[in-house]
Amino acid sequence: MRWVFAYGSLIWRPDFPFVDRRRVRLPGYARRFWQGSHDHRGTPDAPGRVVTLIPNPHAICHGLAYQIEDESVFVALDHREKNGYRRTTVSLHPEDAPRAAFDATAWVAEPGNFAYLGEASIDNIAEQIANSTGPSGRNDDYVFELANALKSMGIDDPHIMELNDALHAISASATNHSEGALKAT
Ligand code: BEZ
Image (cartoon, rainbow, N blue to C red; front, side, top):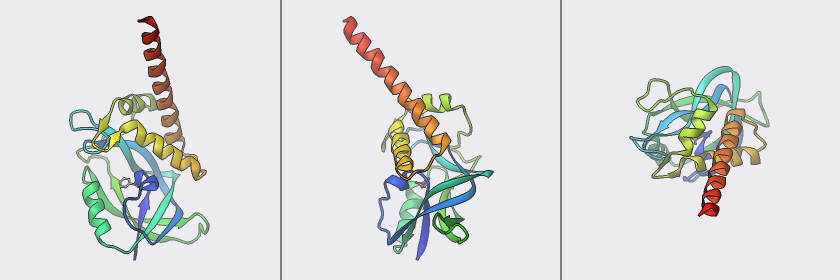
């Protein structure tokens, strides 16, 4: 049996069968909305942004590991993450036994892949996400779901929480503007 590392949408929506699930940490990596999405939360003409793992010696990425019995899950995830991700092996530490370690498969989008967008300010990332939608839904919903899932696990990931706050501010300001426009008519 093998393990899959979940650090994005697989945290709140694992759409595959698993036999066990553990809270884990991955030292040396930061979760960042630096990968373009042409096929899930955006389109080729107007890409959205989704998460990838960026090497950072000071960071720890907290997430979940799923134990998988059915090998077809890996094939399905290869297909689902075909937009610039590649399979790699990471060494995870259980949150309740940080000295222990075990290997898991992760899908990582590295700099230089065809859909990579890279670093930008939180405001610019939020603006792009607020205006993106794709076959899997609105890009801002992806951020809200991820932030809520991390909060419910007690995980404070500043990049995600700042983005979540920026997107709520954009959404509140859009609501105020449209209410103002309605009152004016
Ligand atoms: C995830 O953990 O949800 C994930 C993120 C990027 C690619 C594949 C899976």
